Image 1 (cartoon, rainbow, N blue to C red):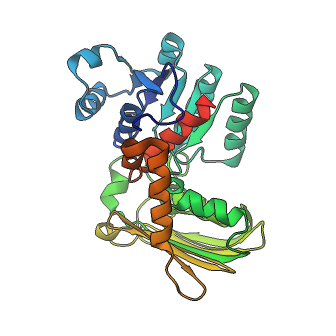
Image 2: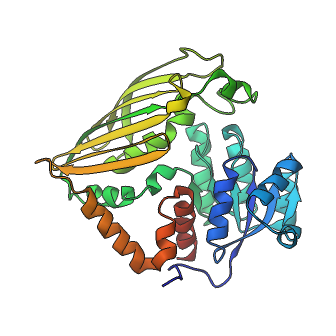
Length: 333
């Protein structure tokens, strides 16, 4: 049972634009699903970063010789014509790079956020639909264990009506984090605590609660850091299904204790979860207080074993790998 469902007969050629820290997670997924993706090209203005990435990922000299390195993404798209392009560059570059990749006929894997404006996001989606191409966005919280299961059940009404939720993101950064690059903390290239650090959590909540945001009462502030964008945001949100969501996101807290937490309350269930010091937690209780978390985990593990054996189970703790697993299946469908 080692072969995953949804594997392709021939892997799709894959190019990665941006070889910074998060690129490691993307290439781990590419190596894990080599039956679906074949790394053909890397793009970065810093060639040393590219070589460092390849060495970190354990590519042999022979393998590296078969991977083309480019400083210019336009040249790469023209020469390589990859079938899939992943973009892990600063947020402000996402729109231009994404449109170029789609125009070249490539499916797209975009790190969060998709763009820094709704109009640009809509334009990317329209361009993809016109060319019948797929876009995956790196909202990796959706790929933590049990999240998709719970979202599907809530959408199907198994937990009763969604009442309200709350989410808190206290992802502290010191001033040195923003000073390390001129684009960090700018509205044009990065965004602040809401668009950058909190976008994962907001996406998770609308996904779990089954509806997009319909209206908002919100405020942002720059409480501590020297930068253009906000380092604190607060909002009371009403979703389209009539439920409510309280939100807080900030980077002014202790960088050594980065944490995020959420709660969702329905007519039948209370769901709590979060991340603290890199460790995820999730708890599912009914209204009598009975804990059903273990039952959900047992079902998930059994389903994944049936689906792909040990290889399928190994991807569970790695949300980027889970995203690539899902995207590979979507492209194979």
